[in-house]
Amino acid sequence: MLVVHKYGGTSVADLTRIENVANRVAKARDAGDDIIVVVSAMSGETNKLMDYATHFSANPAKKEMDMLLSSGERVTAALLSIALQSKGLDAVAMTGRQAGIVTDNAHTYARIESIDPRAMQTEIAKGKIVVVAGFQGINKDGSVTTLGRGGSDLSAVALAGALHADKCEIYSDVDGIYTTDPRIEPKAKKLDTISYDEMLELSSLGAKVLQNRSVELAKKLNVKLYAKSSFSDNEGTLITQESNRMEEVLVSGIVLDKNQARVTLRGVADRPGIAAEIFTMLAEAHINVDMIIQNMSEKGSTNLGFTVPQSEHENAKKLMATFDHDIAGMDFDEHVCKVSVVGVGMKSHAGVAATAFTVLAQNDINIQMISTSEIKVSMVIDEKYGELAIRTLHSAYELDK
Ligand code: ADP
Ligand code: ASP
Ligand code: MG
Image (cartoon, rainbow, N blue to C red; front, top):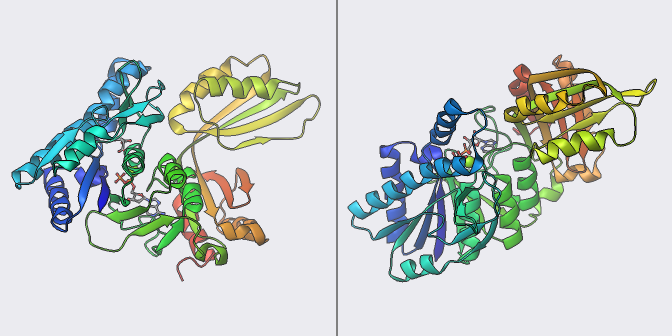
C-alpha cells in the first residue's frame, strides 16, 4: 500500500517530536507500506520568519518571502530524513521542486499547476521513504513559491493524488474532526466520517484542522483522506464522499474564526458603481472580503459593512481612505470574530438560524452581522464572547449528546 503521511507543526515542534514521528513512520514501514511523508515547519517557525521580515519592511517583496518561508519546511524534512536514517531506514529528503511540484506565479498563495512524480517514484522503487518539505513548489521561472498558510495539507493531498496513493493521513495534535474545536469545548464529539462538502464548509469558515484548499482538492481527486493524531493510535476521521449520516444530521459542527476584522462605511454615496469600485480595489490588493452587508439607501446615501482577515485590516484601512470623497465616515474593529453553525440537514429544516439568534440573545451576545447559505449560518460578534458562543451553540443543537 502507498500511503502519504503529513505531520503538522505541533507534531514536529521539537527534536523529541521529530523522533516520535520517525518512530511512527518506521512502524508503518515495518507493516509493509510504501510511504511519502510531508512535513510542516516546526510550530511557530513560519510566524517567526514572517516577523524577521517585517523587522526590515512593513511590505516585504512576496518573492523574497517565499524564499524565506519555504526554509522552515526544509529544515524539518532534512531532520526527519536524518532521524529515519539513524534508525537504519533508507530515507531521502526532497524540496517541493525536487518532488516535481510546479505552481503558478502567485507568490505566497500559489496554486499547484502540475506535479511530475517521477523522481519520487524512482526513490520509492528503490525502497526509500521519501520525506517532502510541505507548503512549497516552484514556478515556471524557477523561483520557489509557497501555497498559503496551512499549505502543507495541500502538498500532501496533491502528492497523494499525483501518486495515486491508497490514502492520505493528516496527523496533528487532535485525533480527528470534532463537532467543534475540542480545545474550546471539551464535550465536542469526534466524527467517524464527514463528507468532503461539509468538511470544506468547516475549513472555509475557519476550522483550521484541515486547510480548505486541501479538502477541495481531495474531493476533486477523490483522495481517501484521514485526520489523525500523531500522539495516539486512536481511529481518526475519514473524509469522504457524501456519507449517509449527513442526511439525518441537522447541524454537524460549530466553527469559531478569530481571524476577522470588521469595516463599516457610513454615508456611502448611493450611486451605481460605488460597490464595484470598493470591492475591485480590495480584490486587486488580494484582500479576501468575507461577509458584506448593505443597508437600504436613505437620502442618497447608504451604510456598507464587511469583514476582512485581521492581517489585512491595516491594508483595507489604507485603501478605504482613498474613497473619502464618497464616504462620510469609517469605522474599523479588529476585536470581532465569526461563529458559524454548519449542517447539510439545514437545507430541509426551518428554524436553525432562529435557534442560533435566540441562544446568543439569551447570553446577552449582540450579533453585529449575519450571513446565511443553504448549509450554514454565520454571525459576527464581539471577540470576547467567541468561545462562550461556541459552547452555547454546541449545546443548543445537542452536539454533545
Ligand atoms: P497542524 O499544526 O498539525 O497543521 P493545526 O493547528 O493546523 O494542526 O490543526 C489542528 C487544530 O485544529 C487542533 O489543535 C484544534 O484546536 C483545531 N480545530 C479547530 N476546529 C476543529 C475541529 N472541528 N475538530 C478538530 N480540531 C479542530
Ligand atoms: N508552515 C506553514 C504555516 O505555518 C504551512 C503549514 O504548516 O501547513 O502556515
Ligand atoms: Mg494545519
